[in-house]
Amino acid sequence: MEEKKFDILMLFQIIFAILVMLISIYSKVTENYNLLPLMLILLSITLLIMGLREYKRTQSLLWGIFILCTSLYILFSAVESIMIN
Image (cartoon, rainbow, N blue to C red; front, side, top):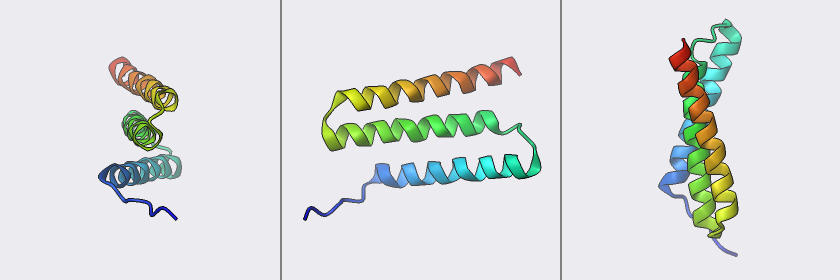
């Protein structure tokens, strides 16, 4: 069996995913939604890292580009919501 390698991208993905979860739980519990743009930015970074890991793992551009485009769309939405407010 092939042993899975723990790389730095996986560490960053876990850290950003935990931050997204903590911010979303905090926003839901306190009903303070001012941190949602920050959560969206962290979510887009998480998806960007997922896309990079998927590309490194499979060398397939299809899923890597799909996840990258999703990440960029979420980042654009977050920046736009910051600019509007």
